[in-house]
Length: 345
Image (cartoon, rainbow, N blue to C red; front, top):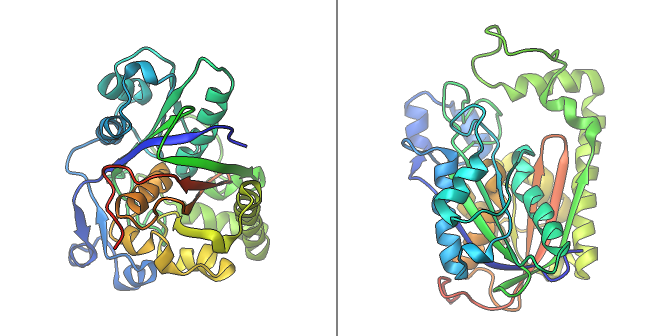
């Protein structure tokens, strides 16, 4: 349960999107891969790092929340990939650049589920003391080559650049978190390791991340059916658990902020098993953005609220999944239309 947890502000900062046609012309992907993902464009940063984009989103979210340094008791920053410097604290950068106070600032590393993991931790941190009133959660990533190939490192999901931010409050907000459930299955952690030995960094490591190579090695050992069953079970437990905890049914949900996976993966993970209409989700928008690492649920929620797709008295379901594996789902009720949101026509 999340107690009295409200969302006072949220935002996303995204660089310009590069059309898929341009990626095809440049040889960054091939036609079958582009068709399987259904992606029309992907956000690509020029020179901004993940923490810089997170700080930009944070400044907007704080302004929207009307929150100052004294209102933030915790800063949590989540990222999936390299944050710009070795042995460095990106959460402290976000705190300095966007908040300007001296509360605890920490980094959360739970790959693509990092944003929701941070939300889970922040709600518990605020609930632990009546003296704590607010928290800032940010995410930011730049999935740049040569270390990461946004089209081919994880075929089926196209990785984007961008930052997101959410201001959590125990006092008030335009939306209330009705439930938040996280489920883990560590038996699947090897899917993103592929049996590789542990050891010191080596020059013999692959120059570009190849998650598909690891997944194929894992599935050969464990079996495709068993792996798929575990993944489906984890998603089912998180989604059903969030609905039950909120006391609502799937049909009560107006909008779905889903992971920015490619179309094939969304069909298998959400559209087909739960009968969710893609038009009720963030897919029509996210296919122009790409996978924001840990930031998909925050960016998706911001989009649904800002465009007026979800309005006062309506529910939104946020869903996220990350390697490890962990799944998080939250039911959020929009209480009022924030000043920056459009009026639905």
